[in-house]
Image 1 (cartoon, rainbow, N blue to C red):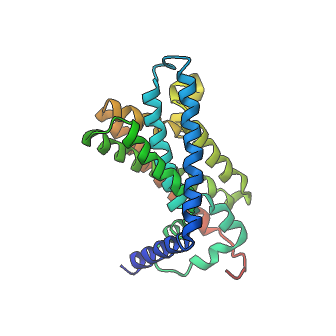
Image 2: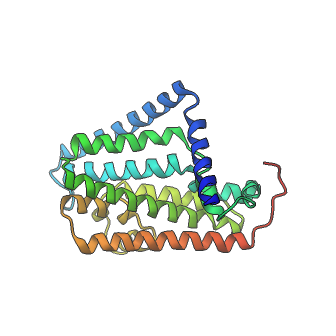
Image 3: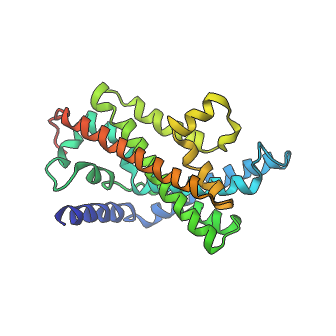
Length: 256
Protein backbone atom coordinates (compact mmCIF):
# COMPACT_ATOMS: atom_id res chain seq x y z
CA UNK A 1 0.00 0.00 0.00
CA UNK A 2 2.83 2.41 0.85
CA UNK A 3 4.47 1.71 -2.50
CA UNK A 4 1.21 2.37 -4.38
CA UNK A 5 0.80 5.69 -2.61
CA UNK A 6 4.35 6.72 -3.46
CA UNK A 7 3.87 5.68 -7.11
CA UNK A 8 0.67 7.71 -7.31
CA UNK A 9 2.24 10.77 -5.69
CA UNK A 10 5.27 10.49 -7.97
CA UNK A 11 3.11 10.39 -11.11
CA UNK A 12 0.81 13.14 -9.83
CA UNK A 13 3.80 15.37 -9.14
CA UNK A 14 5.17 14.68 -12.63
CA UNK A 15 1.84 15.73 -14.17
CA UNK A 16 1.67 18.89 -12.06
CA UNK A 17 5.16 19.83 -13.17
CA UNK A 18 4.24 19.18 -16.81
CA UNK A 19 1.16 21.44 -16.76
CA UNK A 20 2.65 24.15 -14.54
CA UNK A 21 3.34 26.31 -17.59
CA UNK A 22 -0.10 26.26 -19.21
CA UNK A 23 0.91 28.22 -22.30
CA UNK A 24 3.93 26.00 -22.92
CA UNK A 25 1.81 22.90 -22.30
CA UNK A 26 -0.74 23.89 -24.95
CA UNK A 27 1.94 25.03 -27.39
CA UNK A 28 3.87 21.76 -27.27
CA UNK A 29 0.73 19.69 -27.68
CA UNK A 30 -0.29 21.81 -30.66
CA UNK A 31 3.14 21.40 -32.28
CA UNK A 32 2.94 17.61 -32.03
CA UNK A 33 -0.62 17.50 -33.39
CA UNK A 34 0.45 19.57 -36.40
CA UNK A 35 3.37 17.18 -36.94
CA UNK A 36 1.00 14.20 -36.87
CA UNK A 37 -1.39 15.88 -39.31
CA UNK A 38 1.47 16.21 -41.79
CA UNK A 39 2.16 12.46 -41.50
CA UNK A 40 -1.51 11.68 -42.18
CA UNK A 41 -1.43 13.97 -45.23
CA UNK A 42 1.57 11.99 -46.47
CA UNK A 43 -0.49 8.80 -46.46
CA UNK A 44 -3.43 10.60 -48.10
CA UNK A 45 -1.10 11.61 -50.95
CA UNK A 46 0.25 8.07 -51.25
CA UNK A 47 -3.23 6.55 -51.51
CA UNK A 48 -4.33 9.20 -53.95
CA UNK A 49 -2.05 7.42 -56.42
CA UNK A 50 -2.75 3.79 -55.44
CA UNK A 51 -5.88 2.07 -54.17
CA UNK A 52 -4.10 -0.23 -51.75
CA UNK A 53 -0.68 -1.42 -50.63
CA UNK A 54 -0.56 -5.17 -50.05
CA UNK A 55 -4.14 -5.26 -48.83
CA UNK A 56 -3.99 -2.03 -46.82
CA UNK A 57 -6.25 0.85 -47.82
CA UNK A 58 -6.20 4.43 -46.56
CA UNK A 59 -8.82 3.73 -43.88
CA UNK A 60 -6.75 0.83 -42.56
CA UNK A 61 -3.62 2.96 -42.33
CA UNK A 62 -5.57 5.73 -40.59
CA UNK A 63 -6.63 3.24 -37.90
CA UNK A 64 -3.05 1.92 -37.66
CA UNK A 65 -1.72 5.43 -37.18
CA UNK A 66 -4.39 6.20 -34.58
CA UNK A 67 -3.32 3.18 -32.52
CA UNK A 68 0.37 4.02 -32.89
CA UNK A 69 0.14 7.72 -32.01
CA UNK A 70 -2.14 7.09 -29.04
CA UNK A 71 0.04 4.34 -27.57
CA UNK A 72 3.34 6.07 -28.34
CA UNK A 73 1.96 9.27 -26.83
CA UNK A 74 1.14 7.46 -23.61
CA UNK A 75 4.55 5.74 -23.49
CA UNK A 76 6.73 8.73 -24.38
CA UNK A 77 4.51 11.27 -22.68
CA UNK A 78 3.02 9.81 -19.51
CA UNK A 79 5.78 7.20 -19.03
CA UNK A 80 8.62 9.15 -20.57
CA UNK A 81 11.37 7.59 -18.48
CA UNK A 82 10.84 4.29 -20.30
CA UNK A 83 13.27 5.77 -22.84
CA UNK A 84 15.60 7.27 -20.21
CA UNK A 85 16.68 4.13 -18.35
CA UNK A 86 20.19 4.08 -19.81
CA UNK A 87 20.67 7.72 -18.81
CA UNK A 88 19.59 6.97 -15.23
CA UNK A 89 21.96 4.01 -15.05
CA UNK A 90 25.01 5.70 -16.55
CA UNK A 91 24.62 9.05 -14.78
CA UNK A 92 23.93 7.60 -11.33
CA UNK A 93 20.48 9.23 -11.09
CA UNK A 94 19.11 5.81 -10.27
CA UNK A 95 20.58 6.19 -6.76
CA UNK A 96 17.73 8.48 -5.71
CA UNK A 97 15.15 5.73 -6.32
CA UNK A 98 16.76 2.76 -4.61
CA UNK A 99 15.54 3.51 -1.07
CA UNK A 100 11.93 4.19 -2.03
CA UNK A 101 9.34 1.57 -0.97
CA UNK A 102 8.44 -1.14 -3.46
CA UNK A 103 10.12 -2.12 -6.74
CA UNK A 104 12.38 0.48 -8.31
CA UNK A 105 11.13 0.23 -11.91
CA UNK A 106 7.65 1.76 -11.34
CA UNK A 107 9.25 4.70 -9.50
CA UNK A 108 11.49 5.26 -12.50
CA UNK A 109 8.75 4.97 -15.13
CA UNK A 110 6.35 7.35 -13.35
CA UNK A 111 8.90 10.00 -12.49
CA UNK A 112 8.57 12.22 -15.56
CA UNK A 113 5.80 13.36 -17.93
CA UNK A 114 6.89 14.86 -21.25
CA UNK A 115 4.29 17.36 -22.47
CA UNK A 116 5.22 17.25 -26.13
CA UNK A 117 4.23 13.63 -26.61
CA UNK A 118 0.87 14.02 -24.87
CA UNK A 119 -0.12 15.69 -28.13
CA UNK A 120 0.40 12.34 -29.86
CA UNK A 121 -2.04 10.60 -27.53
CA UNK A 122 -4.67 13.31 -27.96
CA UNK A 123 -4.24 13.29 -31.73
CA UNK A 124 -4.53 9.50 -31.94
CA UNK A 125 -7.84 9.42 -30.10
CA UNK A 126 -9.21 12.31 -32.16
CA UNK A 127 -8.05 10.67 -35.39
CA UNK A 128 -9.88 7.46 -34.55
CA UNK A 129 -13.03 9.29 -33.46
CA UNK A 130 -13.10 11.46 -36.59
CA UNK A 131 -11.84 9.10 -39.30
CA UNK A 132 -11.75 5.61 -37.83
CA UNK A 133 -15.44 4.78 -38.37
CA UNK A 134 -15.98 4.56 -34.59
CA UNK A 135 -18.65 2.46 -32.91
CA UNK A 136 -18.83 1.15 -29.34
CA UNK A 137 -17.42 -2.19 -30.42
CA UNK A 138 -14.64 -0.75 -32.54
CA UNK A 139 -13.70 1.74 -29.83
CA UNK A 140 -13.48 -1.09 -27.27
CA UNK A 141 -11.08 -3.00 -29.55
CA UNK A 142 -9.17 0.24 -30.19
CA UNK A 143 -8.72 0.72 -26.42
CA UNK A 144 -7.65 -2.92 -26.09
CA UNK A 145 -5.09 -2.51 -28.86
CA UNK A 146 -3.72 0.69 -27.37
CA UNK A 147 -3.27 -0.88 -23.92
CA UNK A 148 -1.44 -3.88 -25.40
CA UNK A 149 0.70 -1.59 -27.57
CA UNK A 150 1.65 0.52 -24.53
CA UNK A 151 2.70 -2.56 -22.57
CA UNK A 152 4.74 -3.90 -25.50
CA UNK A 153 6.52 -0.60 -26.11
CA UNK A 154 7.32 -0.03 -22.43
CA UNK A 155 8.58 -3.58 -21.97
CA UNK A 156 10.71 -3.37 -25.11
CA UNK A 157 12.19 0.02 -24.17
CA UNK A 158 12.92 -1.13 -20.63
CA UNK A 159 14.74 -4.21 -21.93
CA UNK A 160 16.70 -2.18 -24.50
CA UNK A 161 17.56 0.58 -22.03
CA UNK A 162 18.58 -1.90 -19.34
CA UNK A 163 21.36 -3.13 -21.57
CA UNK A 164 23.28 -0.14 -20.15
CA UNK A 165 23.69 -2.10 -16.91
CA UNK A 166 25.80 -4.63 -18.79
CA UNK A 167 27.56 -2.81 -21.64
CA UNK A 168 27.69 0.73 -20.20
CA UNK A 169 26.41 2.22 -23.45
CA UNK A 170 23.33 4.35 -24.13
CA UNK A 171 22.98 3.64 -27.85
CA UNK A 172 21.01 0.34 -27.68
CA UNK A 173 18.19 2.04 -25.80
CA UNK A 174 17.89 4.80 -28.43
CA UNK A 175 18.18 2.28 -31.26
CA UNK A 176 15.40 0.24 -29.69
CA UNK A 177 13.15 3.29 -29.48
CA UNK A 178 13.70 4.37 -33.07
CA UNK A 179 13.41 0.86 -34.48
CA UNK A 180 10.09 0.01 -32.86
CA UNK A 181 8.56 3.39 -33.72
CA UNK A 182 9.85 3.36 -37.29
CA UNK A 183 8.67 -0.14 -38.12
CA UNK A 184 5.35 0.40 -36.35
CA UNK A 185 4.67 3.39 -38.60
CA UNK A 186 4.14 1.15 -41.62
CA UNK A 187 1.77 -1.77 -42.23
CA UNK A 188 3.72 -4.90 -41.42
CA UNK A 189 2.66 -6.47 -44.74
CA UNK A 190 4.82 -4.04 -46.73
CA UNK A 191 7.77 -6.04 -45.44
CA UNK A 192 8.47 -9.59 -46.45
CA UNK A 193 10.46 -12.67 -45.61
CA UNK A 194 12.86 -12.51 -42.71
CA UNK A 195 12.10 -8.84 -42.02
CA UNK A 196 8.43 -9.58 -41.43
CA UNK A 197 9.38 -12.42 -39.09
CA UNK A 198 11.66 -10.08 -37.12
CA UNK A 199 8.84 -7.56 -36.75
CA UNK A 200 6.72 -10.15 -35.01
CA UNK A 201 9.41 -11.78 -32.88
CA UNK A 202 12.55 -9.66 -32.30
CA UNK A 203 11.23 -6.10 -32.59
CA UNK A 204 7.50 -6.66 -31.95
CA UNK A 205 6.42 -3.70 -34.07
CA UNK A 206 3.75 -5.76 -35.79
CA UNK A 207 1.87 -6.17 -32.51
CA UNK A 208 2.17 -2.45 -31.72
CA UNK A 209 0.12 -1.15 -34.64
CA UNK A 210 -0.65 -3.54 -37.51
CA UNK A 211 -2.24 -6.35 -35.51
CA UNK A 212 -4.41 -4.00 -33.38
CA UNK A 213 -5.51 -2.19 -36.55
CA UNK A 214 -6.53 -5.48 -38.16
CA UNK A 215 -8.38 -6.52 -35.00
CA UNK A 216 -10.41 -3.29 -35.07
CA UNK A 217 -11.56 -4.01 -38.63
CA UNK A 218 -11.91 -7.77 -38.25
CA UNK A 219 -11.69 -9.05 -34.70
CA UNK A 220 -10.09 -12.47 -34.36
CA UNK A 221 -9.90 -14.10 -30.93
CA UNK A 222 -6.71 -15.98 -31.77
CA UNK A 223 -4.84 -12.83 -32.81
CA UNK A 224 -6.22 -11.00 -29.79
CA UNK A 225 -4.93 -13.76 -27.51
CA UNK A 226 -1.57 -13.69 -29.30
CA UNK A 227 -1.36 -9.93 -28.76
CA UNK A 228 -2.02 -10.31 -25.03
CA UNK A 229 0.56 -13.09 -24.83
CA UNK A 230 3.18 -10.98 -26.61
CA UNK A 231 2.45 -8.00 -24.36
CA UNK A 232 2.80 -10.12 -21.22
CA UNK A 233 6.00 -11.75 -22.50
CA UNK A 234 7.69 -8.49 -23.50
CA UNK A 235 6.70 -6.86 -20.19
CA UNK A 236 8.13 -9.81 -18.26
CA UNK A 237 11.35 -9.79 -20.27
CA UNK A 238 11.77 -6.06 -19.72
CA UNK A 239 11.20 -6.41 -15.98
CA UNK A 240 13.59 -9.35 -15.68
CA UNK A 241 16.38 -7.66 -17.64
CA UNK A 242 16.01 -4.55 -15.47
CA UNK A 243 16.09 -6.62 -12.26
CA UNK A 244 19.16 -8.55 -13.39
CA UNK A 245 20.88 -5.32 -14.28
CA UNK A 246 19.94 -3.74 -10.98
CA UNK A 247 21.78 -6.50 -9.13
CA UNK A 248 25.03 -5.46 -10.75
CA UNK A 249 24.38 -1.72 -10.62
CA UNK A 250 27.19 0.34 -9.15
CA UNK A 251 26.24 3.67 -7.63
CA UNK A 252 27.20 6.73 -9.58
CA UNK A 253 27.87 8.51 -6.28
CA UNK A 254 26.03 11.56 -7.62
CA UNK A 255 23.75 13.95 -5.79
CA UNK A 256 20.29 13.96 -7.39
